[in-house]
Length: 297
Image (cartoon, rainbow, N blue to C red; front, top):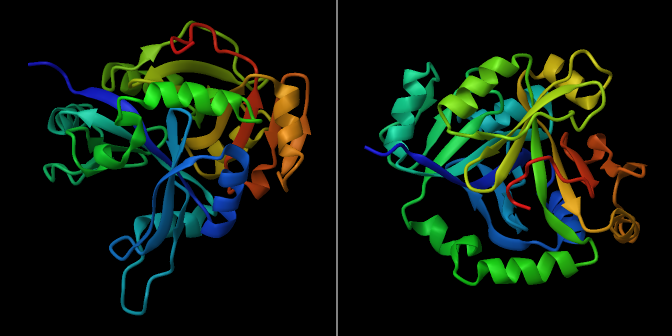
């Protein structure tokens, strides 16, 4: 019987304290397509899902519980750690097979058997993981990345936007145990290791993996450096700490950002780095650099 196959990144979920402010940031910076924008009474939250290049980001504002109601896990997470990325969600072919593999690997999961989603316990995976079935359901009907004309549209749209976006380079996940992370991502999720290469943040040690169809994850051990990644690992534990985008021309991208209230923290010859304190706990970076062995190039 064939193993379950991880597909596209369904969404990366940064928890924010103001959805309108987050929407202004994403809309002015990326000119994304909006796949969803709603309030969920079940999750008691406001959220939007934006398609940016080949990837998807879901800023979510979790609301305090009403009197007599229990707080959602998203709200409790935000109350404990403040605004920051909560999880990565992927489409998957054969959700039940993946659920069985995760449990066999010692990963605690919820909603197993529901047929609609599987959530992994955050203490069992570096970077909380969520999986949705890729079976031609509602989300695939509204997700433009599944349309036959998508590749042509993406190639014609973002690279010619003033930001010059080529792709999301990678998502950075911090961990204190790279070997254990590799056992999960390669051994269970069938991620493909990229060639050994320096960390994208000086002083850290990283391994890079292609997860699913087109998402690269940089698994990073900050090794006590004075960085956002090191502080996140100490305060939050293994978690998503940043997102890096590859652009056509860094100077042109910086010029585009200067036309808005973009919270730029630093501009160097190698990258533009935004102020993590103003981007809801996620460190966004922009670079011309291409990861060694990146199969998407």
